[in-house]
Amino acid sequence: MEKLQRFKNYVDQCAGYDIATRSRKADAVLFRALYFKLAIDNTNNTLSSIGKIVNRDHATVLHARNKLFNYLMSIPNYAKLYDIYKLDYLGQKITEEYKNRQQYDKLKEKYNDLLIAKIPKNFGYLLTNNEMAYRKLQDEEKQDYDQRAELVLKSFEWKRKDEQRKEVYDIIVGEPAVADARGHL
Picture 1 (cartoon, rainbow, N blue to C red):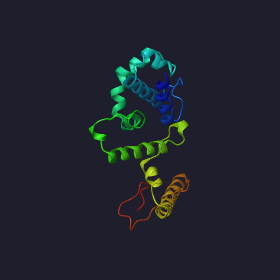
Picture 2 (tube, one colour; picture 1 turned 180 degrees about the vertical axis):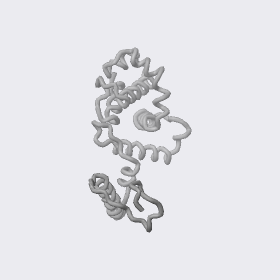
Picture 3 (cartoon, rainbow, N blue to C red; picture 1 turned 90 degrees about the vertical axis):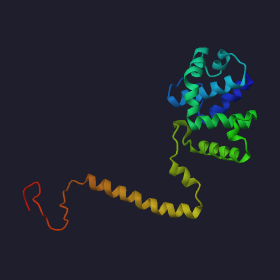
Picture 4 (cartoon, rainbow, N blue to C red; picture 1 turned 135 degrees about the vertical axis):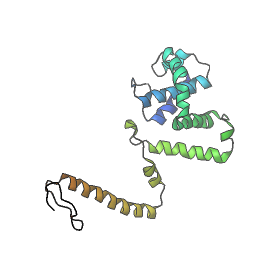
């Protein structure tokens, strides 16, 4: 039971909320499936005892094993969380793919990026690739980026103002070659 609680605590930390909630949102279901996979693969506990930790019955654990495990492991973020737990906490060799230290360090860095990316954790909002790349910039690069981004944001503001204007302006581009919709040249 202590091992099961460790698995649950790890997944709770990754999810940013308690996976034992009654939520049926896809994110919560997949995090629970991650817990079930860790528990089934690394303990000899019954399906009932595994499910009991997250207020579910054996049928839910069985359904996750039969229907969700392959799908879960095809999603890179969840597969990495699974592998990282096995590397960090269980000390197991995952596959030949992760056997050298350099690959492990890269995997650990990606894990930390995943944890940073959950803002705010309650809402499950993930940062975009640009937002994560911004966090890795040096201070001078951030200042340069901010100046450029400010101009882009202003252009959106101008566009919104143009779309909200009630006045209509004729756009003049050289001399008119054909009549407009009102029949004027």
